Image (cartoon, rainbow over all chains, first blue to last red; front, side):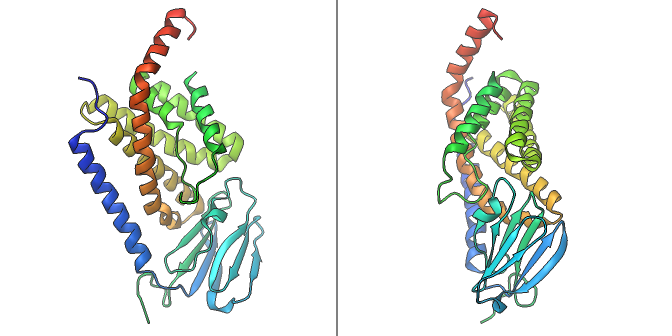
Length: 124
Length: 163
């Protein structure tokens, strides 16, 4: 029998995958609070921890692996990198607890943490 | 010859500017149509060869990281495709495309986590899953449409002994 493009069973599986992942993305977005600190790690080791509220003015950090990280107004992003894919830069500014931006070629990670290190607690 | 097709598709794809709504790192994966054809009609070894050549190409143009990520994702996804084509007669093209796209993402993320030395790269996972479902569905559908034509081409070439 010729293989079909899609069967009923497939459609159900696809719907379940889509629904689950959409729920994951939306719940992640909705419950995220403004983060307190940004942890920059290189090669798995913490390089520097930055309190985001300390940098209302534009501040740049140049790492010796060719990465420049810019913090401004409680947000932080990769602004320059000598890697070829630039996925880290395209990720853009991150500011909410639990968000990450990664430059794989330069093994550099920025992670936003919440007030007490916990990612999911909302405080008002 | 298929590898050439894969490379061409890969290259054409890189020319398309990343649309604003696409999450960082996500690509349409057109070249996977070629891998998928190899996995469905030629067998596991040719499909792996296409994957390896694709990864080498990625390595030449975008560096060793791209090679490792492309190869890990590609092999995982090729294995998944092959197993589904071989052992599951009633799984449709679309679902196979989606599952292999997700395997591709997963393999790449695993390498990313390993290289970065932390699990932080998994933060990209949810968005990549959605992108994978969409692009996988497209890849599968395109393949379904292209298979008859490709098989005919294959026959003509083999017939002429130009393989």
